[in-house]
Length: 259
Image 1 (cartoon, rainbow, N blue to C red):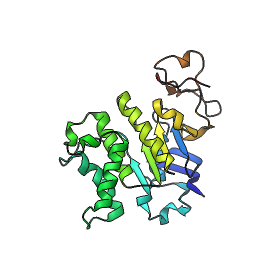
Image 2: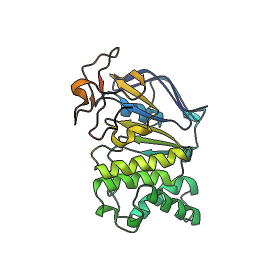
Image 3: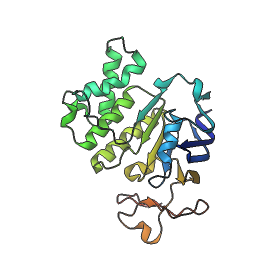
Image 4: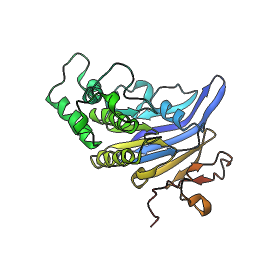
């Protein structure tokens, strides 16, 4: 059974088609990266899978259930793109992460021992356990993003969905993300992530999907750079490529050497 199944999906905004005839499957225990240039539709695909934007056509299933009838949202952890953990009401790191347990315990129950243990374990996974009582506003941008990932992990989901989790964060936080995701996958979790660059996450990726102009332009192993595209700081999917022959370059500065 696929954890995520997308069949011939289409999404349109204001009469403009953003995704068309997109099909994708993510199996249990897989780590799938959705790559693409800015404006390619990759984040729209993720939001459609989560039911945050409606489909104009096609079908989506989660854990074998049609999305429109899916109710087990506690099984899905979501980290949105560039959402500051320090915004809104002042809170400690532990309080932010504890909110990830609400879908499991319900809003009318006080946190119990299992909730507190899950919060501490999630913070330990992302390397922030020592900051549990600190105001989240005192964290760096990368640490705030790690806090949001810990919040998702605290809910003990089966599927973790991340929208550009490493965008604009420091190398230490990127490495912490990679370590946390590796542990999540080792425990049987499934990961679907959107990325413009992979960095330390690349060794975890089982399959890459490239979205270009609203279509799936490539699906397979993470594309390898060639020629001058392999140089430092060159990391993108070229917007001028055609869907039939996408010119894909993935070459973060800290890329692992090819075997």
